[in-house]
Image 1: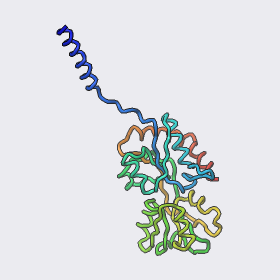
Image 2 (image 1 turned 120 degrees about the horizontal axis):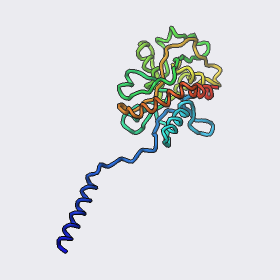
Image 3 (image 1 turned 135 degrees about the vertical axis):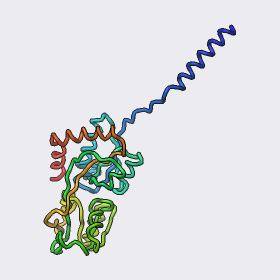
Image 4 (image 1 turned 90 degrees about the vertical axis):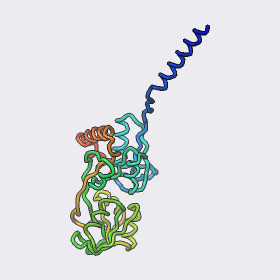
Length: 246
């Protein structure tokens, strides 16, 4: 009996130690967490039913579906997008994000999926054009490429920075600023219904959009690029652009 007991004890201990020695496998994350910033039609905005929609939202849903995951899209301030990705609160940021060398220090970017021309919005009859912006009060959304460009190129201008485009527009309408610098396609959407506003002729500068991924997450970046590459090639993104830009 004593020998039997000892053998049984050894077997139990062996099984216990084997179980303890097995590496723990983290459960697969079945949810793709994405951050965006609304108020940037036609890329991301709330429709009449208060649903978040737009070009980027359709792309985000396609990425999650192709990866076999549920999607969770969170609307956050523009200046917290990259922080959300870099600290792991979100897997991706998609919000008309221009790819810049400065931003690449914080996150990795996907392939380019859109090219954006930067435009200037003014009140009709203002006399403002692309050559006389220095010295003006310029409204921009904070931390955008328009913010960076204006700061670097118009040393005599007053840069009025706002958290969202609703306040940027209010600045111009209320005389707090002389003009707005922002992406052309959203600029067209922003001035709809404002007959006293217009977009200045010409393009101020151009940039490219990409999706932000946590630095070093090569696997996710490759999956995103594969899906984006397909949608660029087969015209899906162009179709979304036409869909939301009417």
